[in-house]
Length: 511
Image (cartoon, rainbow, N blue to C red; front, side, top):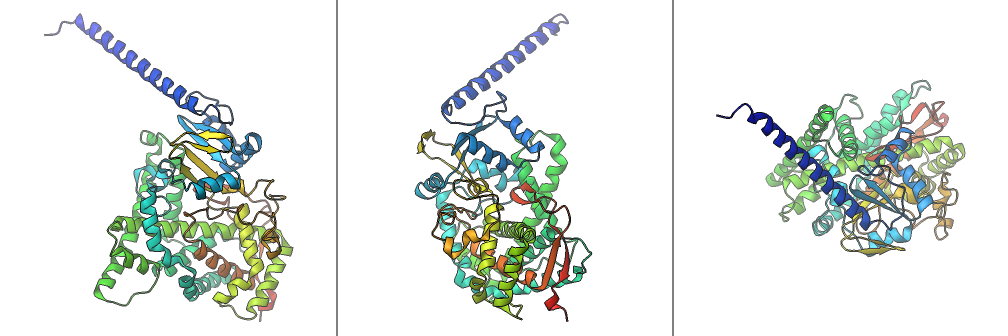
């Protein structure tokens, strides 16, 4: 039997052991931080404000001032040059600017995607969303195999046969807008674009109708929005596993992701059954993916769901935000709007259906959409990892370092783009094509190198059809106070507060 007098001694020994363990842990962490930071001591960047959290306090202060993260990085590049080092706790965060360094990393070296950087996109709060889809997979060999299999479904020759589907979704969209075109009702066009682009990707790519244009209570938009917010929050929450204050939000994100994955699984299984039964089925993107999956064992059901959600979410979110930002800029600049409307009337005349041949003739509209992507890229950048020590400019970068590339920054560098904050579609005119206007190697809205966005042609077909037909039929006016747009980061970049307008039919369309 243990004596009473021995209890204090036992408590004392436990306290001493715990104190030793804490001291040892703190010492180990400190030594580790010193060692890691010593490897990157030669790289320029803002001073660390905290030994433990690094530059996190600086990031938080800028966010509280209303600056988005990439605005802060743009300012740092103007101060420190093309290579900027920041610290997020024990992790070095390196930003690379300039077309030559970007081209070297993404094309010449063809660096693989950083698994660490895309982990939260693949599995926010541990819940599978993007998984190993084309956007997030870090295994370069696996990506290359799957990309080559899926590429034909996004080829221009295939997409040009889907113009009827693009126009069909646009018909529903314009019918809804027509019901709101009384010159008084305030319409959030960012929300309407989000719904119609979701309808397009569903019908054109997967032959499913998520009924989001008509049904304001559809769960699909809110589920996607919740997942995107969850991904953004997870980047800022390194201790989410033990932060009980976030558990309710984490649960809502998990439920939204499960809803989307269950829906995708159901659609895929139904199509697989139709194919195996020899039933008639549409020759869409899903059919192509399933046909190649039959002979490719790595394209499992889980991976097919990854690709389904990758195309669904990325395809909808990026085009929706491009249209929203570009419409806002058009309405801010009446001379640009007038020129676009004149071109639309010249190309389409009394027709409303946009043919494939019309897309190339809507040249100025295309330039305007490109300028919208330059100034407001929905996907703000990408991240790669060095596989060995690399020399970037004047600096050596250790192996295993994550490098970040910001399209927002590259598209605003004054040495590349004259008056970079000015919205000017003529930067992309035929006359400027071979000049130093920024076209070509300075323009990266869909990334650069082998891992450029597979859906960029799809997105630009869709954007031209929707914008042309909207401006052909309707005159939109920004609400007072909407002249200056703010950016909001939620994985993608979107207009904060939306794009609020009142709408009238154009006079020439009134009977």
